[in-house]
Amino acid sequence: MQTFFSNTFPSRLLQTLLAILALGGLAYIAIQSLTILLLLIFSVVLAVGLSSLSQLLKTYTRIPYTAALFGVLVTFLGALGIFFSYLIPAVVQEFSQADVLIEQVNTTLEDISTQIAGNSSLSASFNPEQVVQTLQDRGSSIVSGVQSIFTSTFSVLLNVLIMLVIAVYLALNPRQYVQGFVHLFPKKDQLKVHSMMDTANHSLQWWLLARLSSMLIIGLLTYVGLLILNIPLAFSLAVLAGLLSFIPNLGPVLSFVPALLVAITVSWPTVASVAILYIIVQVIESNVITPTIEKRMVSTPPALLLANQVILGTVFGFMGLLLAAPLMAVSIGLWDAHKKDTSDN
Image: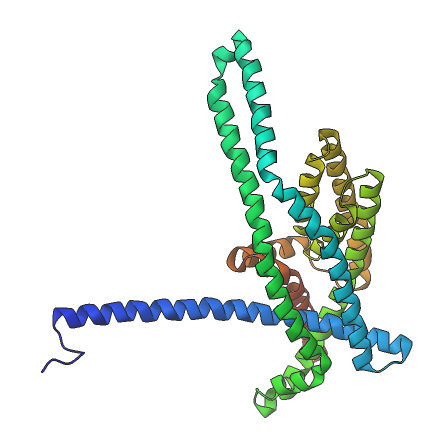
């Protein structure tokens, strides 16, 4: 009687296939677990921000903490609602006309091809039909790529909603979750773990305060500049610039892309004006706003932060970019606290 573990070829083949399936399943679970872990970490960052703002509101208004948290949450959700209710209809309208845009681009390229063909010196050096075909293919792929970016935005919004729900539960009673986490460690290490969590929380609070201040200033500067230039969707683009400045170094580059797409629909001089505006805002942010704020709060070495962003962004994608700066701030805070304890001893 043959058993499953016999040495016959069918049994060995079945065992190999099952082992491959098991390894694939474990790899999938590991990847999904890592994604969930990143969502949880960012939920903690959001919870710290909500808790800090709620404590600040409670201090100045003397209302209960729960009421303060509710006020902060309603304000945050209201601002997001206004932003997306203003932005999404305009974006849908623009991309519903994507086929028309492609047709206009193709017509323009065909006109250029006709002009080149009429010029003997240029037609001898270039193949107009090949150039036009290449540009048409690239133009279509670019528009399709942009459409896929906005399609993937909905999955990002779903993750944001999940993180926000978790963050609210954490912010409702943060002490309970801290105590629960501390009790996972041996009793002799609990005091040290609690101290490390206090240090991490303090560093993260100050970093968030610095980042939120920078985001607000960048959003206001961008909004004023876009209004002066009479750019469509000025409010949404300014809010987007402020939100994406949460990601140091790379955020301003990401926020420039939608502004560029909107400016293209107006005119090429407008594109140049918008580019100059974003460069000026970035220079002010890098050389005035961030150094002034971080000098009083928390400072992260730019080169080290950029390297951390590249590593985490490459490994974990957009979530890695989001978490690179706050994790760096927490790491620096813990390292400074460790050096201080070492010097005291």
